[in-house]
Image (cartoon, rainbow, N blue to C red; front, top):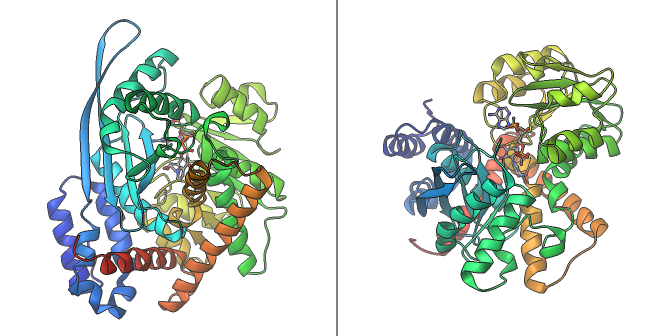
Length: 449
Ligand code: NDP
């Protein structure tokens, strides 16, 4: 990828690419953000003078470490752990942990970089970071998972804390994993520091609506975008990918608001269920029995499983990619457009390739980048931290109302910035610009750090 928006931005981008060779996902995220903040940088020469961009693209700290553990057969296994602390101008580093065999430094850096702007956009006092491991939770026993989490935390403990860095879940890390990580942190530090991790269970410091927040938030954002055009979710059919936390609760909120999700997927293939996804069955298959998604079709009359092919070929008016990065390419975007898609909201981080985004926007499809659409999760994590600090727990309805308000504010911030910088309705530019300005102003005020 090359970008040619201004000599200053191109210089920063080229230097960052040269300094971080072999990291395609990080390069992609850098290119997307730097390109879209060009109109902001042009209006603020002081940012270039203070080297804001040069500093922003360099993480404040990157940690990589060995994670040894013993499997059930008594064999020693070794994984690699990561924590990239990208930017703390607005608050403690904040971002999830991903456990997936594909995890590498490039993926963690792209996620940490994106997280910085997303967190700024929420308006909460949180910086950006991300971490994880190439550990594969599929097929491991509960004991193996616990031993891995304990070993991972022995090292991570040195780098985190409620005022330093507050990890949460991401792919492969849910309440169960957060539980083992929190238990080990508590044991090592000899203190019950609730605010060190978010996504905790409700009985031990967790917050209402944190589990649902990302998926619900995506749908609230979608609702706001449609409302801007005088449209609603009512009666619409949605194509959803993934079948984990984000997909599940996006589907739940779609159903509550009168729309119908007819697909889910995992890395083995996808399900089409024209009657609408049965959430109880989905949770039973994926969360309780931890089976592959084909088991859903085995038990649901009328649903079918497709092992090869692309979920984006299934016709629908709404699309929510909620699995992983680069899962929606230009052919997929073309198929969605052919089938009359009206809006795409990214539940996952960077699921659409730059070509796909361009095609969708050119076709007049409403497009919400993950940075804005999936920010409800981290926003509620910040509220989990507030509740931990105050030793309070807010009720479900109050928490959901706050989430809805945050998504509405976030939509307005992204839309207003898109107008201010000359691209009304372009939420990619709007979200990047609004988040960037908040971080850049804090960095300017805090001197050369
Ligand atoms: P989960 O682990 O709960 O679910 C991930 C889903 O995506 C699973 O169905 C998984 O299938 C599928 N998936 C993962 N990798 C691949 C792959 N390489 N190819 C195809 N399918 C894949 O994760 P989440 O729902 O938490 O996260 C999904 C996305 O949302 C990620 O991009 C994450 O960064 C993003 N996100 C999550 C937030 C949260 O609060 N959880 C907040 C903001 C963003 P399989 O089981 O086969 O691997």
